[in-house]
Image (cartoon, rainbow, N blue to C red; front, side, top):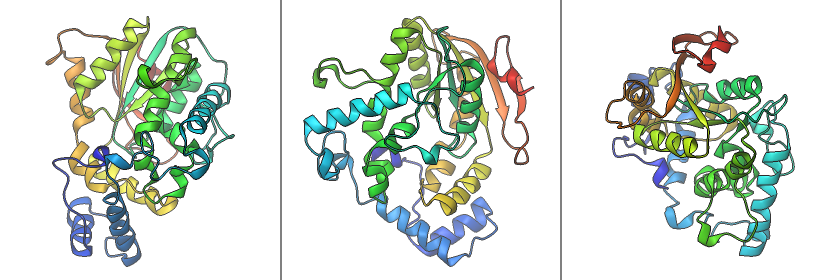
Length: 313
């Protein structure tokens, strides 16, 4: 899948390369854990078994047989969006599956047309920060990871997250209008119709795409806030390894360290300072660090007036 590769990502397809990466680059304590090394190698190999043509968005190749055909697939998609828009969020994202868990805040949903874009590396703590912002401001979380967990292929395939990546993104932000059955709305379209507050977690590796997202939100009448969850790429990679050991879900380690690296930080400052951007779309900026002991509040590094990061003071 194209989203799992990057021109600057390094090869990690044998145990020597993986061990050297963990030892010398990431400085991971258990760099010589044979079980971990072989699991990473298997995770890397699985990702190469699937290409863009295998995506569940348009191909039936890897679709669950129950939801293979177009009619049953659209019914499933409508069910997923309905669940996300009518059910409260689970306290643990891993509990989300079909019939269980939604995207609503654990509190009262507010319809004030406030949009909070949260950017940061995978495993940086972005989800936890997004959850807290959503609950405090009564916002729906527009996270494709929520939709992924409701698609059957997510759990049924070793590289399930890759297979359903494109389809889950469309469930949140919208399909090509030419392909839609009558009456189908994405989660964003459900929210925007009512002016619901929304939180949008993104990696933020491209500042132009984040600015384009903010521009589109502004057209729907939203005021847009940008929040950076800052964590050194080495620490984020270490946390990704620990999460992989706990959950079995593999995110390419080199994609985090080499591919995305410091991109979210660059995106934040390029947008904050107006570098290479003709029009500024954000009404507030906030930067927080999650490089804190487990259980402690993140540190506020920078904030402007009206930034939602003040809830962490």
